[in-house]
Length: 351
Image 1: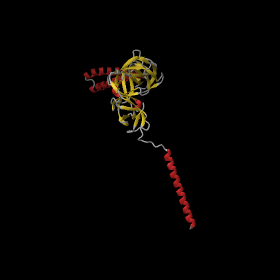
Image 2: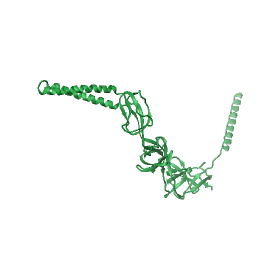
Image 3: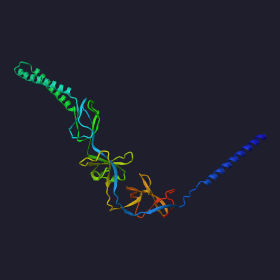
């Protein structure tokens, strides 16, 4: 009995020691952790807003694409006798590009031509005999039907012979040669690629805030990076109605190439927007913005407190943004010192 009492006392003593040690450790940890005082004023940097003129030429980078581009294939099967163009060749609409073997088709055409001559002679003879009641009229009718059928066959073969000469669907440049003489052509197998760069498409991707700067059918100045001094006129033909993967919107221009076609498909270029700077706007540093692209925010200073404010951005350029709503001239905004800053925090402004 005494041993049991001793065991219980020892166990209780051990538990008491552990509890005391845990409590001591907790107090030590709490003392070591920095306790931030939310009432303490946070030192920040701020500026007072005033209306500013914006004289800034804004440019957007994009890519030139061909107005028309297609891969040409044969409409019928056949051996390729000759390829009449090479990569880089300038071709006109309707120009012969590839010639397929049509010798068998021509022989078939000659055979049907002989049949037609014989049937035409039979029809003339049967007309004379039918008028003299020497034969029944049904025999004449059958011969006339056979003649019509032969002429349809002849027209079909002539159409097939015409299709053995593959022609250019539009004027352009041969940008890929995908076959050689002696190869076999069949529908759906590309033989050549033709690209029309006499007129081009130029596409830029911009943010939703910048989309309003472009209007359908309006003209804008464009240039290629390779030829910065060559200014082209581009007409807006499309503004994106759906954002792409990068949450930006495409704007597409129609552009006439130079006379010597020196702007090539795939070249980079830019569209230039000129700002005359007559109007004045609220302009703030981009570094002052917190929040998200969907809902940008910043901190105002009112009565020595930081107040989180929603804003609307209408334009971005370099390291500044133009604000269309949410701010007024004379407002004080925080531009630096955001660590531990929160809505309603006490602040002091340093110079």
